[in-house]
Length: 79
Image (cartoon, rainbow, N blue to C red; front, top):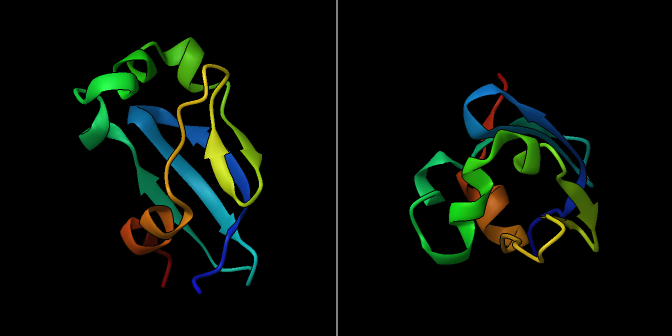
């Protein structure tokens, strides 16, 4: 099982700085999902910035979320 998200901070250009349960950190880019169904609402920057971490993944007020494994596998980790 991959580590789960412990912390997420919104950045510019629809990116999130994420910290995982193993304390690794990196950048998860949400921009590639913004034209897909429920994720279109994330294009509103004010709404995007309302991201929270619940149960090891990132979520928004209208229940958009990403699979924790997707976040981990698609994150660009710092060297």
